[in-house]
Amino acid sequence: MTTDDSAPFRVGLLGHGTVGSAVAELLPDRADAIAHVTGLRPEISGVLTRSRGDFDEILANSDLIVEVMGGTDTARDHVVRALRAGKHVVTANKQLLAEHGEELWGLARENRVQLRFEAAVAGVVPVIRVLQESLTGQHVERLHGIVNGTTNYILTQMAATGASYESALADAQQLGYAESDPTDDVTGKDAAAKMAILARLAFDTPVHLSDVPYEGIEHLTGEDIAYARDLGLSLRLIGSAERLDGKLAVRVHPAFLYAGHPLASVDGSFNAVTIESPAITEITLSGPGAGGSQTATAVIGDVISAMIPPAQTPPTQHRLGFVDDVVSSFYLHVEVADRPGVLAQIAQVLGLQGVSVKSVVQKGTRKGSAPGEPGQSRLVLVVHPVLESRFYGAVQLIASKDFVTATPRAIRVIDEEFGA
Ligand SMILES: NC(=O)c1ccc[n+]([C@@H]2O[C@H](COP(=O)([O-])OP(=O)(O)OC[C@H]3O[C@@H](n4cnc5c(N)ncnc54)[C@H](OP(=O)(O)O)[C@@H]3O)[C@@H](O)[C@H]2O)c1
Image (cartoon, rainbow, N blue to C red; front, side):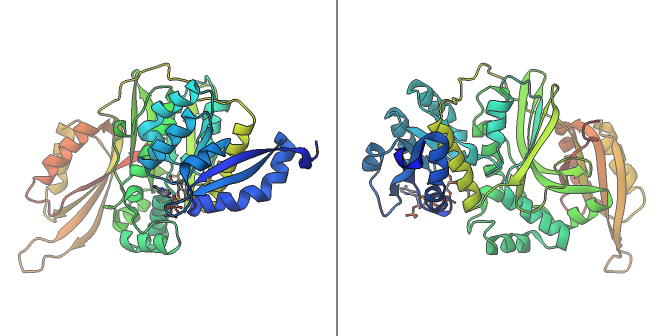
C-alpha cells in the first residue's frame, strides 16, 4: 500500500504540556512510517488545554483520545466519556489508573475499545506490554521497581557527590527532573500509584493506591548513604510487590541494595523493573522513566497498538488480601552517649525482640563539650530479616533509652544474594 491512500486515524489530544506537546510534534513526523505499517494515517484532530479546545468537539472528531492532562477529576470524566462513546483511549496518567483503573478497564471492555497506558509506568520502558502480553499467564512471584526517576536522581547524586537531600533536590529541579512542587515524587506517592498498576497486572487482582503503603526520601541524610557505602550498600527508592502466603504485599520505601542486585546499578533518572517468576527466573527492564519525547514515544507506541486491534485488560480473576506485616532486613543508625555498655544494651533490646544483628560499625566518636560530660558516638547496624513490627518495636524501645541522643533512623535493606 502507498502511504497516500491510507485512511485517516484521528487522534484527539487532551493536554499540551511536557508530554502532549511532544506527542503533537512527534506524531506527524512518524505518520508516514505508521501509515506504512497500519494502513492508517494518524493525524491530530484537536488539542485541549485549560485555555483552548472544546472536549465535546474533539471527542466527536476523534477515533482515539490521548489523555496527557494529569489529575483525576477532569481526566476521569473525559476518559469515561471517551470510552462510553466507543473511542480508544491512551493515557500516561498513573494516579487516574491507580484510583479508578477497575472502572475504566471495565468500561473499555464493555464498549469494546482499548485503554492503553504504557507511559503511565516507567515511561518508555515497555513493562506494561511485557506483563500484559509477553508474560500473560505466567505465575509472577515478585516485582521490584525503581519507578520514580526524580528520587533516583536525587539519591544517586547524594551518593556520588555527598550532596544533602535539599541540594540534590534543587539540582533535580534545575535540570527539569523534578517539578517545582515535587511532593508526589519525594513522598513516594507517584511510585505507589505505579506499583499499584504493576501489581494489578502481575497478580491479576484489584490493587488500589490506598492498598500501597508508601514512605518517601525526604528524611534521608547523606550520612546514611555514606555509612552504608562502607557496608557495600546503595540506597534506592524501591517499589516491591510480592505474594506472601496467598496474600499480596505492595509497598514503596527507601531500601539499601547489595551490589549484586540488578537494581543497585540503576543510576540517575533511569527507571527499572525486575520481574521474578519460576519459569523465567528473572528479567530486568530499564530505561528513561520520564521526559517529553521519551514518554511521548510510549504514548505513540500505544496509539499504533490501538490501530492494530486488539489488546484488552481483562477483569481480574483473583481477590488477594494484603499483608500488613512483612519480613525485611534493616539498617539502623543510632546516636548514643559514648559510655561503656551501650552497645550491649542495644543488642539486648534487639535480642529480646528476636532481632539479630548482621553487622555493626561504630562511627565518629565526638568528645563532650564540658569536662566530665560523655562524648557522642554513632552506631550503624544491619540486622537479619525480621518481621517489621518486631523491628520497629525494638527501635521504639531503643529510642526511649536515656543514652540515645537523637531519634534513631531505620531503612530497609533488600537482603539477599540476588538470584541465589
Ligand atoms: N512529564 C513526564 O515526563 C511524564 C512521564 C510519564 C507520565 N507523565 C504523565 O503525563 C501526564 C501529563 O504530564 P505533563 O508533564 O505533560 O503535564 P503538564 O506539562 O503539566 O501538562 C498538562 C497539560 O494538560 C492541560 N490540562 C491540565 N488540566 C486540564 C484541565 N482541567 N482542562 C484542560 N486541560 C488541562 C494543561 O493545560 P494548560 O497548558 O492550559 O495548563 C497542560 O497543557 C500526567 O498524568 C503525568 O503524570 C508525565
